[in-house]
Image 1 (cartoon, helix red, strand yellow):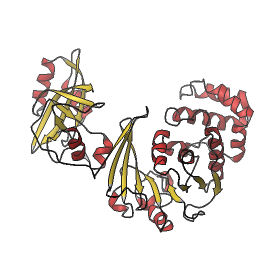
Image 2 (image 1 turned 90 degrees about the vertical axis):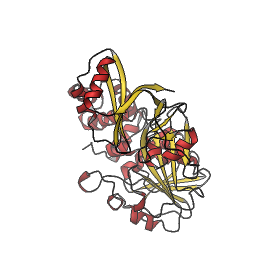
Image 3 (image 1 turned 180 degrees about the vertical axis):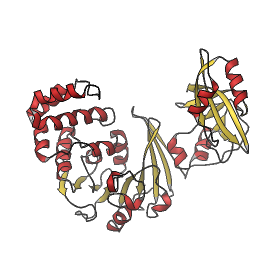
Image 4 (image 1 turned 45 degrees about the vertical axis):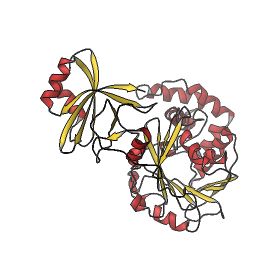
Length: 392
């Protein structure tokens, strides 16, 4: 449970003395091992009354660094920092809302609000928590934008005609993390009902079952730097015509590409080629593996398995050059690894019940070489691919 900030804390942290103290604390280790020394340093800077707020803010800024563009100047609560959308992802979504009036119903400390305010025609942010609203005002000013902020209930929108955006909290009663639509805060069914007749965009967990949100006409899965971050649900007025599923693959360097179920999906099931390719997680979760294969001239090893194969991998991905492959057996694999003097092994599995960590221990690896083994199933046959991982 993180520190509970007050409005006085926010005012202090945003003032000149608070900013100077945070800058002084930013160079400290801020680890569990240095906790007592860090507390003492915070108290020496601002006294015991403000030390907890100062130290918590320094720690949260450190955690958010690299994910949020202005992390070293922003203010957060612990829950808000955990749920805040990475700036690259927030700006990607905001581009679809450019030149619209947008109301962020659950603006929290402003991670999405700031991105939207940079491209929307007009932007309104609301939240029930006055502390988070005060933090959002500070954070927006740091980012150089000035959205209108009001205290309001997300289930009673105070705007008219604007596109509604929401990022419901994924912690239910007792702080337990949940992905059930009815347990989110605010609950998705109630949110959809409150927005009836309005364009609505909702940020959701990537594991959300689309069948549980029938009002979403387009479900977009978004990854950043190889990790699936979220799903975005778009109602009919905002969805792309003819598209129900989309994968958006983003990089922190500004790179990115998209794939939808409107793209061609003709691809063969074929014998293993020179390369194996594991599509980005957003592609897999969006159910667009065949579409990805068709785009890059790949085939499926098995129609039920997401691993793809071909004689040339797509550019800019981590692919696996196949050294050898055959029916999987632990004793056979151990022997082949010893022959190749493999001492460092990455184990990837899909479609087989194998614990990678436990397998590595049983293999008793020795030697200077490294390799990747991909364990999967082709038809009913468990198959092992011994590979070299390559960044194309």
